[in-house]
Length: 300
Image 1 (cartoon, rainbow, N blue to C red):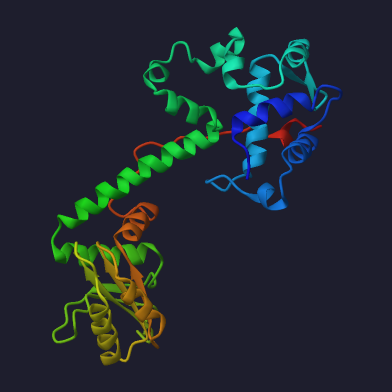
Image 2 (image 1 turned 90 degrees about the vertical axis):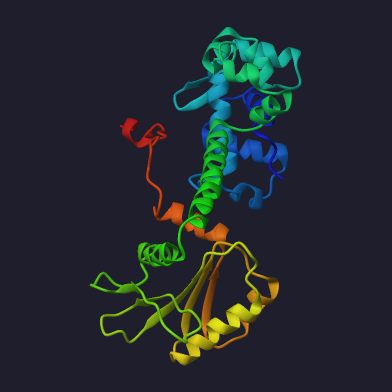
């Protein structure tokens, strides 16, 4: 298991006690110190842009540089006199220790932060265990989770006809169906067990995906999926998507695994997730760009 971010600070500084090393070498030092496995080293951040270890090493450097414990010389990390003095007197290093130094306190802005004053001890501790990258990802995840819940509630208050159109719009945004005219449509059948729409995957209509949309709050049971499978048989169809705002029973999910037709089940949580991902019913309010140093630019 990968230790928390704060626990990276001391071994990072300790690795520089007797020698200067570069970032790649530091990653190896951290791996040896914590006895991390190759599997640990491959674990990525939630955004997937880098590994957790690499991210924590990068932020350890940032924090220690801001506290004037470490500097960079000729592309290598170098411990300062302040850093050496700290190691002589301590066998651990926390963010609270760094806050005792004016330069780091000004950087972190903890003394002036009204938000930090309102945090509980538990929240503050949790924050110290995460890199700023991880804090940003956690905040994004929290915002998206709240949005998904609000979005699903909004959908539940729309008409069944609106929901059917929404489902077709979503599948088109997910690139099912072609770009040709009438590649997807809401179609109300009679005596067909409620097929609500069709996605034509080619202009001649040789391959179709049939859709059933249920704006429900109750559990979708196996008999409802069996009815939909029967409707597909009646249309001589092999592909179907069943989308609901609620959830499916275990028996319903097991049933689709053992039938000839390919039926995909999408529940309310997945629906809201896809709506956010493909911008159906949501819009971008503001974008934040996270930038890093382009080391290639500075190489001669």
